[in-house]
Image (cartoon, rainbow, N blue to C red):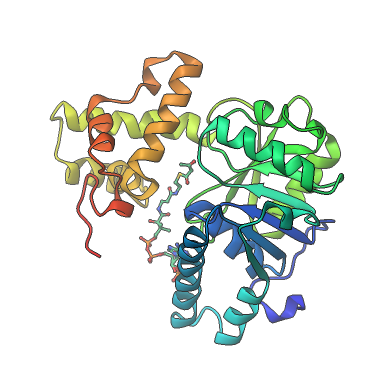
Length: 298
Ligand code: CAA
């Protein structure tokens, strides 16, 4: 596979990374797989079950099909991208990856268990990077024997579209790891901002209280859902209103991020409003469940 077979611009930033492992093929993991493969990286994607792997891959194929329909890439380029992706349910298939990106469930115990196992199978010089939005990277790195080769690489949804990646350095992340992580993100055409390992990094530190305030405004009856969203779209030029964005990101995801940030900061701005909690408990997760602040068909 040569870089010219893909539609995206060739990698410009110089990086030693050739083969990328991605753990988790949900919305974020799948987006990272699609983007890395589109830019010519060899990708190994792992899910915990064949059913989840098939579901994730079918989302990626649909996204590539949409790009073909829109004339953004050819059918051959789509096939070339898919050919870059090796699918597996085995963690041992990460053995020869230069970088392993983790985008599994947002739960510290699950992540620590994953990294403990990964550390045993991955090659010594491989870099590990978590896509966590709010959990401690330091705490994950602590279960491995490679704290210096560990960082955060936080992508945004939809990954192929959003231009930002937050590179998160812990007190142990080496300069070399930081440089490689930056080079990888830039090779995917992303702009990088650097943050220290503090809950929410830059974007969620500011975004989460804003989203929670929108729910509080709805709870208080300040305005309708439509008017809250129109206010921020038309008044501030945001592409989506906050309630639409909550449906897009996932109410459950935002709720868990808020809980983590509240438990860290003990600051009321990060406390999930009762309405959000009730909706999550009722299974209203947003677009993915067909109902959130709005209703979705299909
Ligand atoms: N994959 C690939 N491309 C996609 C896509 C996807 N999932 N979704 C949209 N696109 C592309 C479309 O193909 C289209 O491309 P062209 O303009 O080249 O044709 C472009 O994005 C715009 O899409 P649409 O015209 O369909 O729709 P839109 O104009 O309403 O844009 C949007 C959709 C890009 C999602 C836009 O509404 C937006 O930017 N929303 C805000 C998203 C945001 O804030 N994300 C961050 C969430 S926070 C987070 O992720 C971090 C966390 O930790 C919680």
